[in-house]
Amino acid sequence: MSRENDRIFDVRALEAFEAAMSCGSMTGAARKLGVGQPAVTRLVRDLEAEVGFQLFHRNGPRISPTDRGLRFHEEVQRVIAGLRQVRGRAEAIREERLPSLDIAATPTMAGGLIGPSLQALGDELPDHMDLQTMSAEHVVRAVRSRTSDFGVAAYPLDHMGLERHVICESRLVAVVSDSAPEAELKGVEPLPLSRLDGARLITVGNAYRIRHSIDLALEAERVRPAQTLSTNSSLNAMMAARSGLGIALVDPVTAFGIPVRGVTVLPISTDIPYFWGLFSAADRAFAPSQMRFVEAFRTACQGIIPDCAFQDPQDPDLLKRVGNLMRT
Image (cartoon, rainbow, N blue to C red; front, side, top):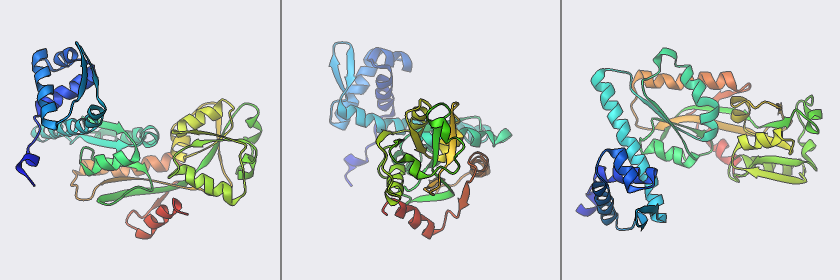
């Protein structure tokens, strides 16, 4: 590797760029950082020279990020978050406080499980906690790069280099409106998939996760919904069901972890498995107080998801079975 590739970016330049992105102007960035505008402008220009591409389009005092600038900003955000984490850890060591807790989670897991998990820690909550939501792929990336202590996401995912602390199994559920015309389904438990034949199906659109499993189940039972409403969020699907737009098939973490008034959650007659878990970098060392979050997470899952079953996170056959769900 060349010496040029070993060079480290000026942290002040990265902070100036991050501030300019968040404030939308060099003037705002200067106020945020407590320095003069010329200093911010110089730092950003030096960073552009260092990376070899333009970060901002400039039109007088106004700036807007370039496409490359937007992509680079995602990386800078992770670096800045990591630096803040280091600063927080240093303060905790100096003052002999409980270490901070940094968690990366998908929106489903963050909304349905992380709050109750932290609450279960009680008096052992650290002084500083950080929860960032992102896609499952970015959760894995944040854990591997150590900008997050723990990651929480649905399986399957790329588990190489990860230590799996908890793997939970449940199954998808149906969500129907409490008002007509779906109200008649409230007493039908479990709900046969055949009730979706000729109806409007509401579900998530990720072809490699929930949606693939749903499509396989419908095909196996020769069920053909008349219409489909796809969204990128199970919560969106639940809200659409509440409006009477159709029958939603969603994950149990959203259905039970983020209660929505005006709907009823029903088991379905066909088991469509759903797995999720808590993991960290494989070689990460944790303080005992941080590891107690693992047990708190288990407690939250057990208390929120009615039929939550814990699987052996070290079982290689389990991981193969989870992976096969997406390839069947």
